[in-house]
Image (cartoon, rainbow, N blue to C red; front, side, top):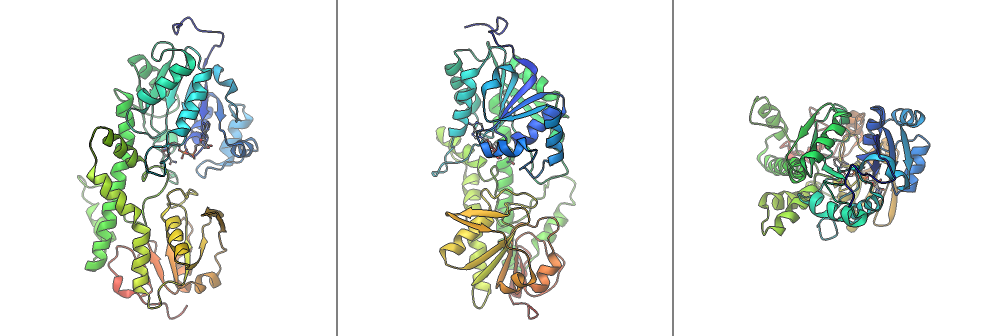
Length: 444
Ligand SMILES: NC(=O)c1ccc[n+]([C@@H]2O[C@H](COP(=O)([O-])OP(=O)(O)OC[C@H]3O[C@@H](n4cnc5c(N)ncnc54)[C@H](O)[C@@H]3O)[C@@H](O)[C@H]2O)c1
């Protein structure tokens, strides 16, 4: 095949980037590159999303309409559902989903589809970077063979390949995409240099590692560490409830140690597209080497059963059990609109199975679809708060009217420590050790 220098008809432009997959990861990344002076073609197969973007409407909470509109009006960002223009891009970055199949194994179908489309149009001299979270070996063993097969070109000779994991924390306003150090890797030393050079133009700091496998492992390590530690805190919360000890207070004290301790907190279960999913990618990869991680196994099982645990615990605390439930916050965590793998959704599924009446309020999630049923967020009136036997606080979004909820609720299960410091008898604050106070609010 042709060498990189010989080129073809198309001439990729190093200042042009194509980003494939405009979701929570790809869209902010596209705007960031646009803000740094690149011309960005944003490609997504979801025509509805492209329609919103063309109207200047951001569907990712951490990205303002204003930032999006600036990128659009300056001509730096062009959203499209077509891959057609990819020959002009010096770099193509893939940010497509990497979920699990029904059997909890890696679902690589989105990645395969996007890589195949990219491979068909691949031009000599281009850099292809994968950002999706995935198991070690994906870039070299899954992506490269498809690119080579579809293009007839040779990776590392005719085109460059890199892997750079996305590390955003949705809802966290303390760290912008640009401020999070960018781990970069390449198939060859030249691929690494080129990948690093690209990201250094858009990010504050790059961190180079020696291979795509190390970079892929870095991402899985970070998220597996979080799953295991949060699951451990949930186990400690269950224990502290039995022992009558406030775990939240113990964590606050423990984190004053200036070395050797990183604070994690209990909650209703870990959700989102990453932390509950990525460790299972690692577990699947381990199985190919005849190994398994007992830590992942335990943490995953514990996480999967959290919603059920909280529901059973509450049923045991209330004399009449659960008959009418209100859920505050269905997103998987504070200040995000994402309900993927959300513990609140799992709780709703349990309530549905048991025929328990429920409603939800979430200021960021106007409606949800569960088991072919569309459910809308109810307005948070005092009547709504009073009607419920029990209010589960599952996501403590900024602005949550805690005092109003406490005053009107008959009983509260607070999984987020949102009612910390409020000393009344009708709150079960998960992990606070106040399990004996399971009595209803006489005023509500
Ligand atoms: N959401 C997070 O907080 C986060 C953080 C770090 C890493 N990640 C990882 O980044 C990747 C993307 O996650 P996300 O949350 O942005 O997902 P997402 O579902 O929000 O966005 C993915 C987008 O890709 C589009 N898409 C799917 N197949 C496509 C194709 N063949 N061609 C073009 N577009 C296609 C979808 O329509 C969707 O808009 C995943 O691997 C995820 O694990 C996510």
